[in-house]
Amino acid sequence: MNLATGVQVVSFGILAVMMIGAALGVVLLSNIVYSAFLLGGVFVSIAGMYLLLNADFVAAAQVLIYVGAVNVLILFAIMLVNKRQDFIPLPRAWVRQVLTAVVSLGLFILLSTMVLATPWSFSTGPAAGDNSIVLIGQHFFSDFLLPFELASILLLIAMVGAIILARREFLPEQTLATELEQPVLTLPERPRQLVSVASDRNSSLDKVERQK
Amino acid sequence: MQLQYFLLLSAALFCIGIYGLITSRNAVRVLMAIELLLNSVNLNLMAFSNFLDTEAIRGQVFTVFVITVAAAEAAVGLAIVLTIYRNRDTVDMEQFNLLKW
Image 1 (cartoon, rainbow over the protein chains, first blue to last red):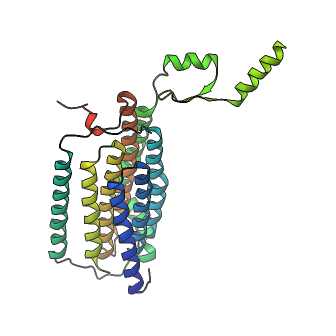
Image 2 (image 1 turned 30 degrees about the vertical axis):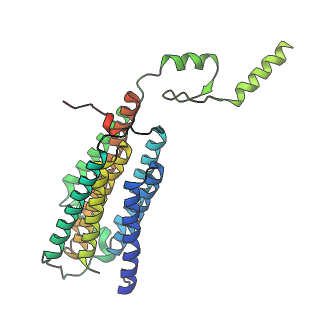
Image 3 (image 1 turned 90 degrees about the vertical axis):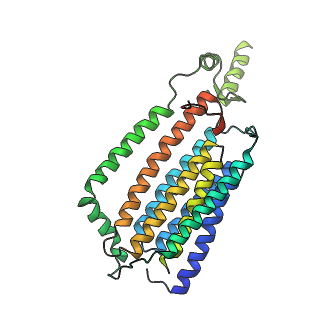
């Protein structure tokens, strides 16, 4: 990508601030729906980083897979598990939080000293640039052929496993019995408020008229 | 642009993900923290691919593989969370005592 250095630095700064802020929001916010949407923000800003790193194909794949599939899947899971429960407070939860914060900060300091101290051997060859998708395809079908095929098998296994894990084996008896009497729209796992169908009311009206 | 900026940024994202992975009590939030970890690794790989391996961009190939594994992991992980929620009626990580001796 041919951008001026100033533009690159400014967009990198904006994306970095967006990414770190959204990631902190994902971890620290108490409402999990906000966390899920901020996770989408993290994914989008990482796609912007990929564009800065001359990788347009992977940026598009990131937006499609992460924002389009994984984030929507997480939102679906949150809506299916919409139990607003207040977790029972642990006796010494703050010890764990402080300890984890210290360990994470130490890990960050360690990694940053490693990054800054290592003499990186920068490549001086011609950049792939717009040719990157051709190169990725060549890698997939020559020297990364076996992992590529294994990835497809992995996706198939994951799909079958997710379906088998998440599907309902049986419906509870009580829900089936009520369904025979009057058709109500309810989920089997949480019968909270029953939404009666409009046709149900019409049929009861019909019954009244028939009785007349 | 420098390689070090991207590496520092992905290190920060990784540490935020570790913090969220250990401290969060909602099981779905744990999965989101795992996604943060995988994304930080992806950013690392892409930075290496752009700065150290510009001719044959193998880092991008690895990133595609990591994205694939992350998608599979998210699907299976959320299915497991749904199953545990159906059996235990909670998503609190502290009350899951399965696979515990």
